Figure 1: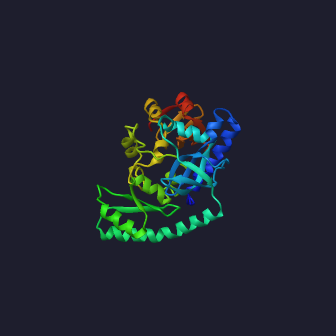
Figure 2: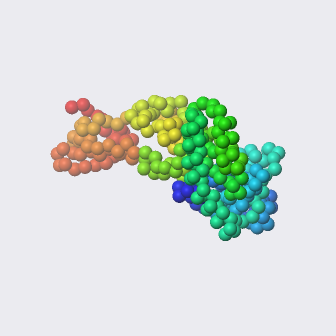
Figure 3: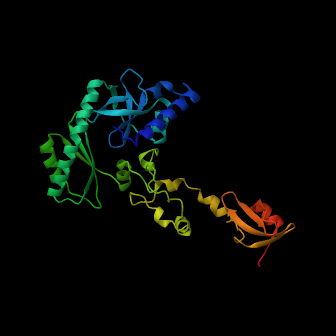
Length: 318
């Protein structure tokens, strides 16, 4: 259900769940927290539900949840204190709303019904694509979601401008005998659901471990264009979503770079006068801030850090 790459997020959530339980145990409002569960549904959707099943589900367990007049299939993503903390951080505790219910733990029949829904979705997608072409709508279908009770079909799409899809909805509703919901998503969400690989050769961060997609990782970085052009890697800034890469938001903070002056290294191959004789700068390691010297008389080598080099030696242009 979650896809091979999205299972990484679930694995991380399991590790976090066990760590929190070991550290905090049953501290805090455990009774209220135990009734709150974060459930991941199909199409990378996640929401909070109130546990009314009478049993405490485990992370990764399949459950049946209440969904807009029907029911749906989901996977438990977090429970207890972690779910309560996420609920608080998102500000949902300040809103007066009734949470949908977690009805029960999914049994074998529910899992069989879910497989039937998954097998039916490709044919529904093909029909939706053909209907979009027939109505000549300027939109791209990204994903479709058939609810477990098969009473609602959600269509996720991208478009560069407003699309009048009323005729399309009527057409699809008469075809599937179900409610049709059209949901427009961003190109970032589209890339996340693709579960593909990035230019680095690794799984996209947004498809694997990231909990939240950055709207703009450069929002607080006014010098990102200078940094990119200076390293001559400006083409690596844009991801598959045609937006700045989310991983750039985890680079070194710009405050530290602005305050610290760039280190000045002597020219490679230049000669320096030392008490042991003339030496040649053979190599420089900027990461370790180490300078390697080679003495021309006996071909011996010596390594010094940058601070020691600047304190002891005087460079001479030869």
